[in-house]
Picture 1 (cartoon, rainbow, N blue to C red):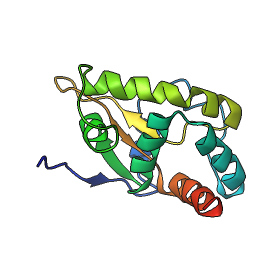
Picture 2 (cartoon, one colour):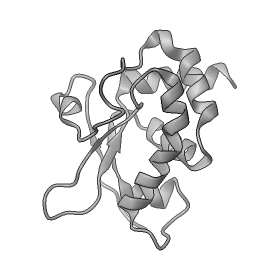
Picture 3 (tube, one colour):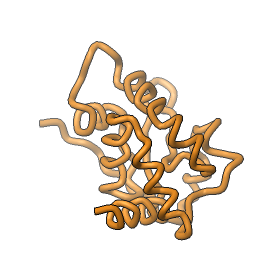
Picture 4 (tube, rainbow, N blue to C red):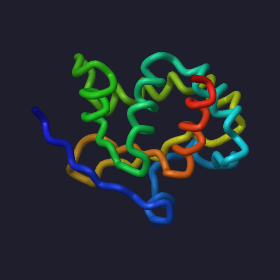
Length: 139
C-alpha cells in the first residue's frame, strides 16, 4: 500500500495566497457562508470524476494532496495518462459549474518544486465548510 504524505494548511496559512492557480482562482469572489445554495448547484453540475476529486479533497480540509494520490484514491487508479495530466483533465470537468458559480474554483493547487513531478491540491477549510453544508443540505 502506498503511503501518502499529509501536510495540512491552517485557514490563515500564507501559502494559500502562494498557490499556482491562474484563471479560475482570481477575479471572482471566494466562497463564503452565504454560498451554500450556490455550492449545491456547483456540485450538481460537476462531471462525475470532477465530483469524485472534489469530494476526496473535501474529506480532509486544508490537506495538500498530491495528484498521484488523487488518481489512486479518487479517480480509480492509474491509466495511460500521467497523474498530473489526468487530474488536469478532470479539473476541466468543473468548467461548467465554475462558469455558472460566479466564484473562484473551490480548491487551490501548487506546482511541483523544480525537479519533481505533479501538483498538489487542497480546499481551504472555510471553503470546505460551505461545500460540506451544501452536501448536508441536499442529503
